[in-house]
Image (cartoon, rainbow, N blue to C red):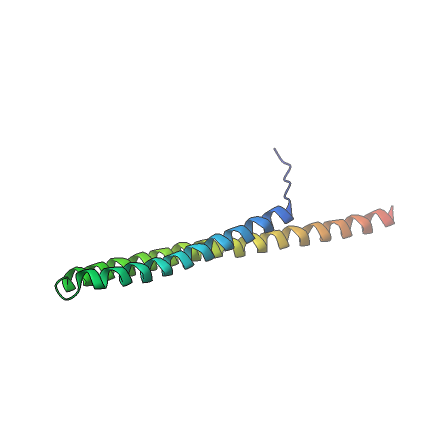
Length: 105
C-alpha cells in the first residue's frame, strides 16, 4: 500500500481532454444562448416581452453556470498538467540523487 506509481503522460492526456471538454461546454453554451433568443424573439414579439425578459434572464443564468462548469474543467486541466510536471521533476531529481549516491559506493 506504500507504493505510488504515476504515469505523467497519461495525467497530461487527461488534462488535455479536460481542457477540450471545457472548451466544448463554453462553445455550446454560447451557441445555445444565441440560437434560443434568435428563435424566441420573432415568435413572441411585443406581446411576449415579459416572457422574453424572463427567458433571457434564465438563459443568462444558464450561460453563467455553464461558464463556471467550463472553468472547473479548465482548472482541472491546469492542475493535471502541473501535477504531471511535478512528478517528472521529482523523478528526475530522485534519479540524479541515486546516480550521485551510486558513484560514491
